[in-house]
Image (cartoon, rainbow, N blue to C red; front, side):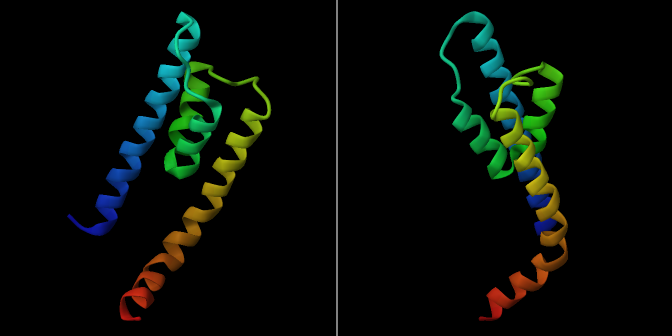
Length: 101
């Protein structure tokens, strides 16, 4: 398996985990149990799970009206949308430069 495939699988798994974390928080909110903090939910989104977080927010209708959470999640999603093309364009060259010293 090449590096790109491995990174894609890690990205996919992290987004599924993030989605599940949002689902868990939604269930806890319904049942009155221990909740996942908003900071933790946003942290998972920021670390790479923004698509999973956004999907969970829309599909589960979780934290759709909560401000500033909603705005912060959208900012993370926009940041990732801007960074992904940059990373795909310049990432391989940067890795080569780092490996060669």
